Image (cartoon, rainbow, N blue to C red):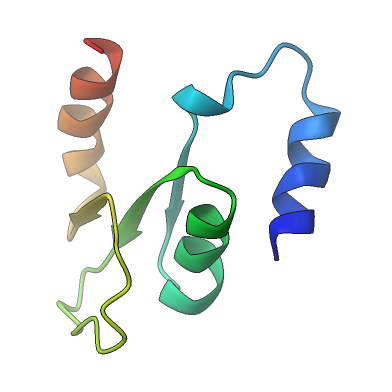
Length: 77
């Protein structure tokens, strides 16, 4: 729910949501919530599950080590 993310961001001082990345393993809650809140998303998918609902994910990884590359790309923006 977008309200959950709005509440979280309202509790964090000096947050720039343009620099937030939601990382999650659930397409229907974590990733869809990030999309609904206009936040970049990263689907942690170690089992290589199919995205059967064609949810528009920003990044997809199968190892948490891959986050380093994503975060380095994001810091170059």
